Picture (cartoon, rainbow, N blue to C red):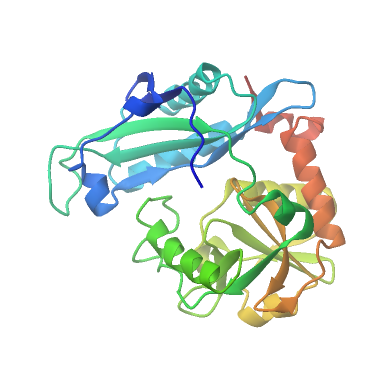
Length: 305
């Protein structure tokens, strides 16, 4: 599937034409995966305006990921927040997916990334829900991957690093070959971690459980949003280690992520799950009310353009 294009990309401090946002083939990140990124969404609001969902938190995580890789960004969080807003406006988009990326560019070669210069780009484009509109409504089929989640002492999941997603790529390719929409990865201890680009929640007896960050997951911003919304709806949410059988015995399962949004799971390894379950549906509806500006309780999450 070809990628949709827009007019402008923000690159190293200014807007450039989409086709001119290019880098050298000897850029460090191309060879060694020395980059960090974010995934963010801008939504069209019920009143006709637009807002970026939890923009400040995303750009703070962007800076934090870079800092953990000894990568000093040449722009402050406030400047990257404004750059996101500028890029959306320049492309006249009411809703879009947003991809900030910082990486080690051209200037040195070798495993040590620190001598290479840091470059920053922000791209935006129209992109529907990652697992499809049908998946949002009817749920998706997933499988537990044979590929294990990267170790917290090998490629720390707390860093949203480009290199980390080779691990996700292996699991995603395996899932696709087996006919699944998505994979679920376990860590080396056999605990449930996450999908290839989503956090996971299990519902049983009215209690919502999700793996803790200490089991080796990315602390997702949509995950955090879902936990806050669930609490406001009166559902207890536990961060606890889960094993494979917890997936099979679940009353409901759903996955969250900026790209995927809030998507119900229909089956795991062929084990059918109630889908979409009552709690999942209620939480999904509340999430979309929040991102579209229909619930004033979550107005602080919206960076209106």
